[in-house]
Length: 276
Image (cartoon, rainbow, N blue to C red; front, side, top):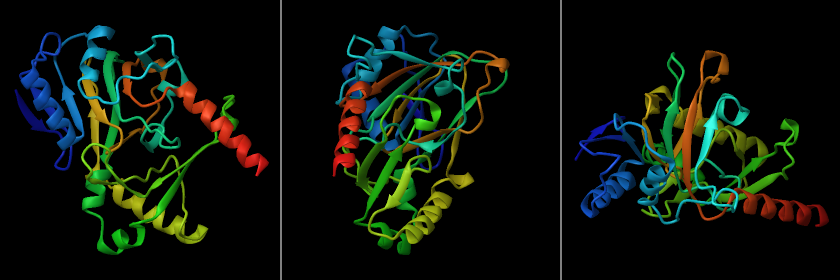
């Protein structure tokens, strides 16, 4: 088994591994080490995987284990471009940073793709911190970032999600610092006033999302990606229009809580804020 770099700062393609039947103890150990080091693993050319096999592979990278999305044994879902969640353009983000329990890992498998190219773009918050200028490092070290999501305008019957995380987050597995700031959900650095926070966030975004910092993954059918959702951010930079063809990514997440549980916690927090 070999690893080929996808970007100079993060991500590797896994070579000489059979996704359908591989998985010895030594192979799993090497894959886990590569994931912790590089944050993104690409398995290409392995053919179609059943939901059960994808679930088995994703579980190699826990804890936490694959999350049951509904509490009814729904461990595997499909992001499909016949729905807004699988089609609209999305700014850079890590999933569920606006909750107390962001998703730890995401496993995606391309089960249907349009004829034309379609992609997901990644950046690394871990690499972003390493290359950050000393003045910005000093300015944001020890601060807290408020993450926020309000889906009211989109018609979702969800509460407003608000969560606070260190702006520089120690990675829960490796302990390495991650610049945990996303353009989609970053609301304010709490230790700074509104105007200063916005100026600093704009500088951080310019650094994190520079063209040279990005890896655009152009999907091929049956690609399997294992993504560190804490160290990395992702974006859908263009709409995946169903008119162009079907786009479906089979998904497994490693997380400490189901989305239903997080919605209920956010609803309780919203009610507490209203009563304060």
